Length: 165
Image 1 (tube, rainbow, N blue to C red):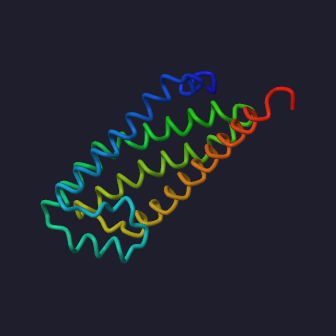
Image 2 (tube, rainbow, N blue to C red):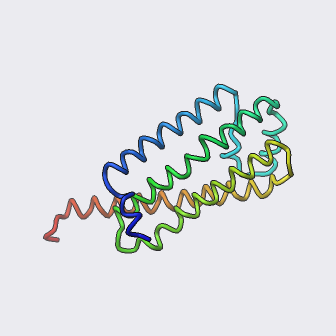
Image 3 (cartoon, rainbow, N blue to C red):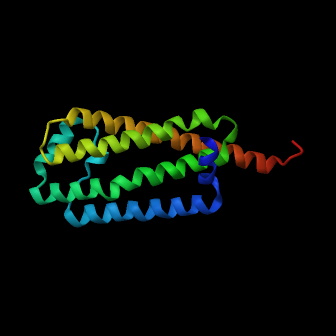
């Protein structure tokens, strides 16, 4: 399985994933700003989620559903690919374990999007589950990003000290 993931760590793939991440993130921010939305993706306290929902018009809720079901559905896959590819490239020796936070972040982010859509369409009250998913997602992305940063530091130190050290 990891052999197939090696493709994520090529320079061209990493640049493509980075560029796509930036474009999608900017599109999400632009769409949210155009509709005057506070994105629920960043709110992990149930009371704040309820407050944000109360302040949204029906039109804003539908716009948020569109963002969650389109742009924010693709974003975790692209960002996960980028973080996973960097992890594979920078820390290949123990990559099996280091990819767990990336996989967790992507899966929980997709689950959070589903819960958000349910909440926004008022199909069921799953605000608490959505809030937990948001907190777990943020923590998993933070751990994955920390792993990438440690890998980058390790790579820089190896470059500076050279092969003779």
